[in-house]
Image (cartoon, rainbow, N blue to C red; front, side, top):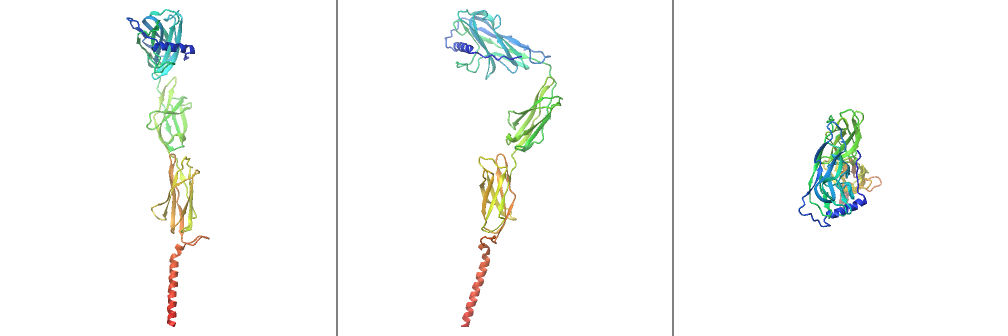
Length: 442
């Protein structure tokens, strides 16, 4: 059944605005004294459409908007709210025998709209020139719907929450007399219940993952089966653990026996625990189904950091170049820092040599260490990680600091200080001995 979405043309919009201005007290409203309320009704007020043995949608069915006990009706408009999940609008017409039939009149609408209350239909008509107003009961319009889902929909004549063109408030259901005065009315609403085919057999669907945790950027294979042997379209949905709303991850077709497979790359997932479920809508033979929930924990990626110490054998006071890099290279925009530590071989406690050495945009660092004391040293570099990567420590590099000068280097006077002191002492003793020998010879 083709759905008709009918929009107002420019002429209709102009006339609609004119009628609305009349409705909004631009013209004085003087309800005739002693006139009883006219009644605007949805008829029938309660009906059931469809058959338990037939599938949806139903054939088109009609409701009428009627008026009773009205005097001098010159213009009318109606705003009808309905549940668009259950009912699908088909058409709206001024049927033969309507209140203005045979007179010069202008139709307003019909048009569909949606506001905070839901879906509504706007429709109306207005007499032209010197046409006399309508008296008594009659039909304002006839509206057709199609039942597209099981359930009960109210049919409510109400006021919209959206402002119309040129007006401060919404459309609403009202009547005007030939003096362009608003007629006092009461409203009777209605409802429609849609029934459909015999309940289809249930189905079920499963979901599973090849691993329930992995680093950001890893692939998670999601798979499962519809328990009936047929092909179908499966929707895989996900949400962060603890969230309420689900988002669609993908739709994947099953094979001929109802099996589906999807490889989810978590590059854009974020560091979180995610819940996953699968569903299918069913078909003409089986009801749809939704799977249980599985969880996948997306963690930070692993990283590594290197350290090279050159030269590895120096004298005290010499310089050692420490350099290396982080892999994979952090992407910035701010670059992390590394910490360099050292200890004597066999020691338990590390001493921080440099606490916050920033890497460059290539992910590398360089530091010059000036040695001071002889000994056998171990050095290590580390970083704490960032939002996407786990921190890491390098392997240990060894540096031997001795008292011997490297080839072509400067001698380590501190290393030879004990020997120099001993030599000076020997020279001093020899000098004293020679002095006393010369004194005796005199």
